[in-house]
Length: 451
Ligand code: UD1
Image (cartoon, rainbow, N blue to C red; front, side, top):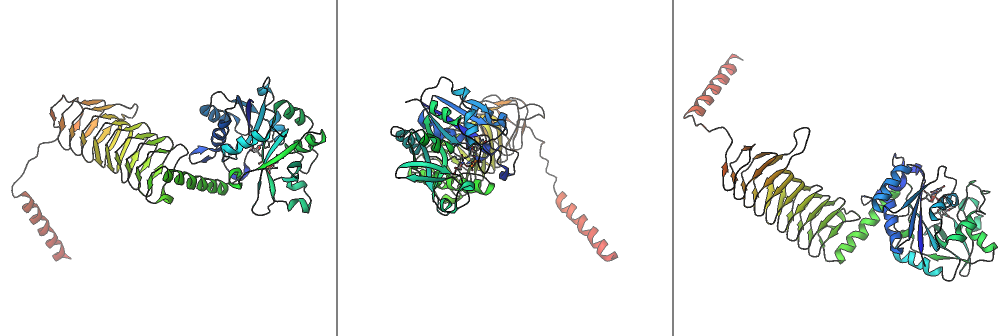
């Protein structure tokens, strides 16, 4: 059976108190909407429609980066969840199959749950997804069940005291045949406590037509809705716990798991060791057998087998660390390739550069890659020895086997095997230090006497 996804993402999220549309708030450095899209992707949807409203342009841009084939339907006014789904009708013209409705602010839905919803569709016309709430709260529609048949869903605001005590509540997600879905939506009215067009009304409408509806259950954690910054922090924490546990299970050593911050797309190979207090920004891949030492910050980079990073290293986007590369303390690397076995061990900035195999970059070396207007490239060959505190003024190339003297400011290319020295010549003046200190002492003595 073909499947289409409709992801509701028009809400403002007033309680977030933010300029960013709610569904673009990040969890593990990834917008909630993208989490929802990835969850839905397990159904291999033939079409995906995002219903956007607040910040629709931004929402559309983010959605299309994740999957350029998505359609975005704009809901100008947020008149309720049924009205939101109705906006997807045009984008689904000609589609035959099941529509699964997801919420853009419910990022943790499990693939197996969506599969169970589709499976339940074989026996029921309409399948809702629900969960048991741990404690009664003034939120969530209440599921009115009769055996495995769902009679109706009553929104909290419209519920009686007796109904409010029900713990089986609505996640909002549903699966239904496309034609039937839009047919039922046409019948939804807004005569309720909120004056909104409720998607939940579909249940009573389906039953009234002699069709069948059911509700399947998932874990509360999966349908955790995110409405406030506190919810966002709690959702991120829940994500981190799961992701850390998954890494431990895959054979990654996390010396202090609770102090390691991961992104949704972080990939780390087996037998890699992550020391305490490491942050993984988006788009980081670490191969097996690498070591990321304490207090390092990585984003947009690839770390190969056997490489060692940190402690206190900052690896920025576009960095490729080859096998057994060494990046030490207080080193920043950006948009650079550090080839096999090369070392940048202390207090350096290497940006827009390529450092050849087995080269050694001395302490305090900096690529001067920016002239205030443009970025320029530094190329260091293989087996190069860059002396401490060398300034590599880009664009510049150092040939294989070359060397720079400590403190050199390199402004011209250095040919292979050559030594570049560019610094003032040292002069030693015998006895000058003693004379200078004698003079200072005499000066101090005169001042003390006068006082
Ligand atoms: C909805 C359900 C409720 C369920 C709860 C779970 C209805 C009527 N109620 O309640 O039974 O327990 O979700 O969280 O469906 N949205 C739009 N356009 C709109 C309205 C909402 O796109 O006009 C989107 C929101 O951005 C959000 C989702 O739909 O992603 C749910 O909206 P929300 O206002 O949170 O739903 P509730 O009314 O709380």
